Length: 120
Image 1 (cartoon, one colour):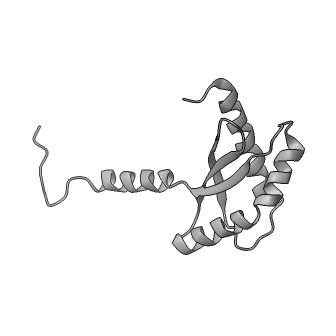
Image 2 (cartoon, helix red, strand yellow):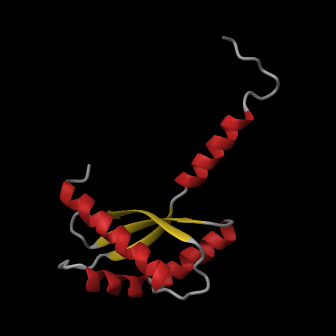
Image 3 (cartoon, rainbow, N blue to C red):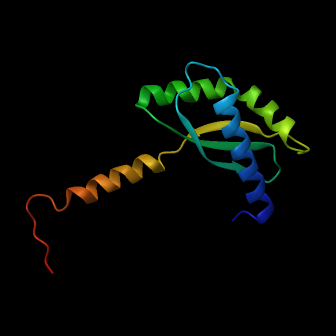
């Protein structure tokens, strides 16, 4: 479990990266992206950035590719806006929890399948 300091660092990085993606990047491959979480290693050398992407799998892969190629710009933004001794190396990962939540909601809305009745 992350301590209070690591939670604060992760939250600051999430905010800075999210703002930089929406404001600084002009790569046409990058679609509608939401930074859902950041997990920083204890030594602050690496940070996993979890993103949710609106669109199909092809758009998701294009967006992740665009983000990976823009990591230098994002790292320099982190360096400019934070007072960290080290700027972590960013890696981008697709966060599918939103898609899973939508799928579960759809399944719940469908109700029992095959005409099975509630046994209450």
